[in-house]
Length: 214
Image (cartoon, rainbow, N blue to C red; front, side, top):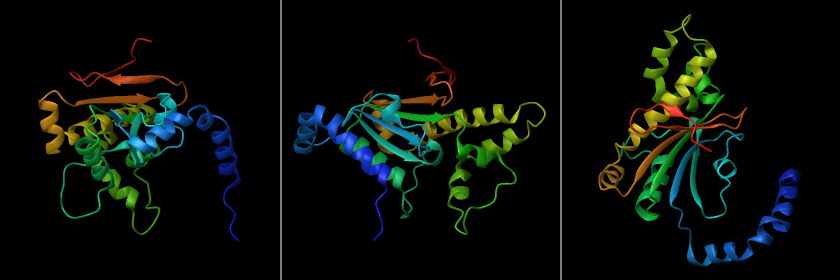
C-alpha cells in the first residue's frame, strides 16, 4: 500500500499538539459559523512565499488564491475553466471581502520562464507557457533591454509589472469595478523578497513600490 508522506504526518501531529490545541475554540467556531475573511490574497504557488506565514494570519483570516506567478486573468466568461476567476467571484460576491491583495515575490520561476527565450514546454500541453502568455507583451518589451538591464533587474521589473497587470485585470471584472467605485472594495499590490524578508507595497496612485514604515 502506498505510504502517505511521513513529513506531512509529522507536521499534522505538531499542528494538533500546537496550534489546533491552542485555538480549538476558534476552529470550532469557524466550523459552525463559516469563514468571514475580509481580505483576498492572490499569491504565487511558490512554496517559499506563503501569505499565511508572511502575514502571520490565523485560521479564517485570509482567503488565499495561489497560482503560477500570482496572476489574475482578464474577465472572460467564455465557458472554459477559470479557477482564479471562480475564486475571485466567490470572495467578492459571497464572502464580500473588502480588500484584495496581489502579492508577487522575488526569484519567481514563472516570471523567469516568461523572460527566457530558450524556455521549452514542460509537457505537450504547455500549460505554463500559455498561462504566462498573459505577460507576453511586457516580457517582450523587457527583452529589448539586453545590455541596459541585468537579467536580475529585468526579472524584478516583470515581477512588479505582473502585479500591476493583475490589478488592471481585476478591474475588468464588473463586480470588482462596481464595488471599487462605491468605495466598498480596495485593491492593493505587494512584493515579497524571499532572501531578506522585505515586503514592498505598491502605491495605488503611482504604481511604485516602497517599503512601509515598520
